[in-house]
Length: 173
Figure (spheres, rainbow, N blue to C red):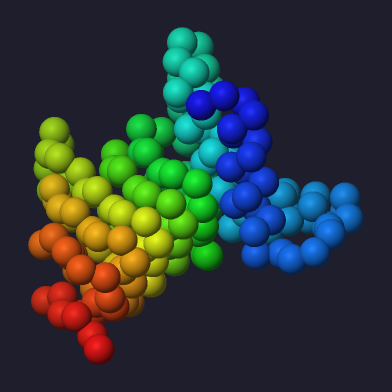
């Protein structure tokens, strides 16, 4: 990822919900004083530095620690999340070494991870929303345009778009 691509992704993620022309003070408030957008900013910096390699990986580890201490989020530097990443409430989120498509929205207390160390991680498509308390565990695939309801446990593949909820997970009409 080049620096130009990094800036474009960051601007898209930070300001996409704010329509119209923003003043410099509004941009500063959004970027640095709102917990959700500040967590996204730090996460993108962490991923950017991790991809650069070398001594920058050490800086990404420091950013990882900062995110986990400040917001209570554990977001791995090795996670591959495309543009459009949005955290609504950055508390208690765990995102492991997974692959996520564009326009991914996650609420508080969600977990995305493997079953055991060395296990394969989830693969999540585009336009996926994880509601509060959702858990995705194991080597599973989630298709595009899926909403996973609050307090749901996902341990099987989701192959068609729709809204899913419950434990065991069921498609909701």
